[in-house]
Amino acid sequence: MLLCCQNGEDISICVALAIITRLFSDTGCFDCGESFMRRDVTKLEMRKRLVFICKYAVNARPSRGNLRQVYGFLCNEKEQLPC
Image (spheres, one colour):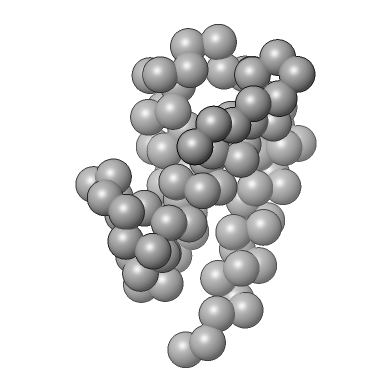
């Protein structure tokens, strides 16, 4: 999957962060979101995944506002999941 934005530093990083947080386990294995349903979304979890992304996208500089939108989206997504 290729994600890109105008400069590859902000929006594409936030989209990758949302995808990785929503669909992958803590170990980086694709699990179709099962681990997302079992755990709470925390800012620490988001930070860990952002650090992982920054290992490969060294020019990543996501804006604070976009990171807040990703966090809000994931928290809202979590609330709407059936129990």
